Image 1 (tube, rainbow, N blue to C red):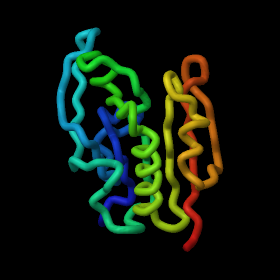
Image 2 (cartoon, helix red, strand yellow):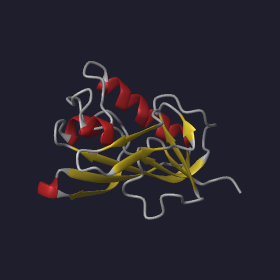
Image 3 (cartoon, one colour):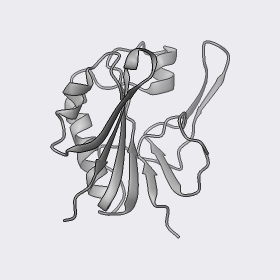
Image 4 (cartoon, rainbow, N blue to C red):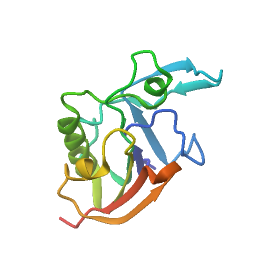
Length: 158
């Protein structure tokens, strides 16, 4: 059985209930380990090294896609926030996120779900959602000060 779920920028799999869920392919552009400021170990160990802007999967490959891209455009080169969450390119982040949405919907099967997570500490979610023409079905704000948004999309039949 092929895995029905793709986490296209998994990082350290922070929100996964089962960080080794066999139903998922965990992809990320980074493979690295760090010790954070509180001495916890952070491991970014994807199943496959892949850039979310150009995924190495066929069209309509997954029933569910998780897209939790870096949300910071300002993070110190050696700071723990960059290590934990990654960082966006200051000049090209809009094009990068737009390409990520496009790739997510390309590899998603018709009637599949895209789970998009965004923290608007630095970039408002309204600027990010404007980068896709797809219409969300569910939008939930969570986290300290409601800064994290979980947004669900359903891919239309083709």
